Image (cartoon, rainbow, N blue to C red):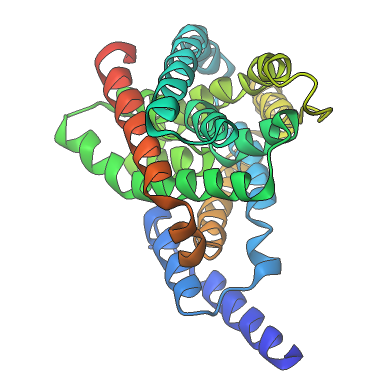
Length: 307
């Protein structure tokens, strides 16, 4: 058993090294990760590092952004993200009731779609006192749709003729998880990547007020604590350092490029953690709800939220 574990780790590390090659795009990295998982060569310990790698990547990419650009994007993004969160949560509650899905699962899927996928689900789960199967249910639904978004959105962006800025804004509001938002933005272009990352992190901040509201909704049922994503503060700090200490611009450029490459690595690790068994357990109603919410936010953000 120990030999098998080491063998799988070696295979995963080798394939991970291949994702560092310059021609490996975010979408290809995710596809390779999924292939590694489906063929049984993924390593759980390595796959579990995807969240940390992604957060480090986002912080490093902050060194490649301008404070002036961030302020401009954030000022318009705050209201739009707030409206999108409200629309998704209300739509989710309505769909959950219509499809007769458990309340906790409904709220978890809605929160994951409204804010930032797995991070939002992990943040509100203890507040709701959600059970393990409910958390897994919501994670699988959001995760599968995230994987599809990484491939689908760049194609749709080109089909609709969206500019770099427009696509970045749309992806940040319509795609669930930070990894797929960043991956889709990177696939579309550097400007799309910067806009998508900034607006997405503004959207992520809504974890805090949503968790507080849900704490009142579930009061008396759980004493869970709200988890605030620490990497957002470090991302902002990186932007401030790059903006106010321009003499180190060459260093910042290198850190930004390292961040982009780490993002590709993170997507490979995320793909390698996919489980077909868990996807089947999620059930058709959960996926139907997730798809309908995705269509609602994707369509409305394309029609009403683009700058």
